[in-house]
Length: 306
Image (cartoon, rainbow, N blue to C red; front, side, top):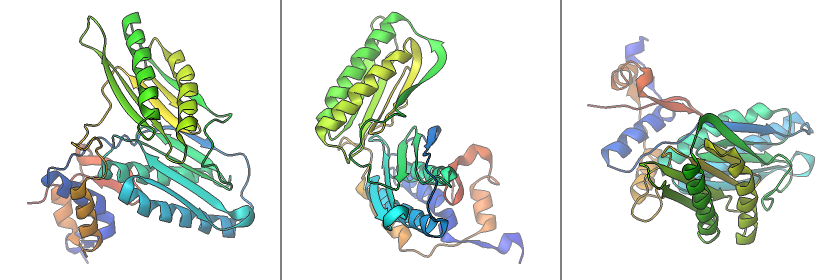
């Protein structure tokens, strides 16, 4: 069979076609921010690979279903020393599509921690963790730290605006189910300080605030540099002089769009096959300029179908 006559299975083109439909339907699609910030692997080796691996895969599959519906998921598979607890969450400004793309990237990377039985990965748009014990209520840990972007030094006015924005984000997130975004103009300039703060949804309000307050102490140590991230057991925080935040929909969150969920269900219930020649044309011969990222099914491309 020639390449031009081949059909590409639905699963392999799900993300690129889904992205095309969302764009056609004018649903807000932003940046999945799937860049890896840090991977932290555990130090305990798995107990029995023939049991551990299927448990891990089952946990990730269970979480995948939840992520496609709400951008958050927890699951437990197995028992005894080979039990696997998992958690994944996208940050509050990601759309449903962006969340799926970010999670797909995280899911391809976290298994690199094997043969250790635990690990976590922080991406700029989502978080994922797996362990052999229930960690859902943990909010501080020995690996907590700040990662600074040592590229541009800012003036004291930016530093002061950042401190204020971070403080506002901590207060707001504690009263907003663990999520906040803040933009604060730097006086006398055309710059702004942008801040995102997000706790994992398994934490209560007091644990969330405690996590963010500890994260604040670390992240402000990145000043006067223009970028900082706090990677904590129970939360993530970032500040920058660049607007990295996605636009929000009218309901105050860019995730959970009814249109996006309806389209996801439609595609899930469809049997879609496209000829290779059609996809080749739609992606400009799979040109890198049309590549959206790398997900669990391989490369993800933007397509334009005529």
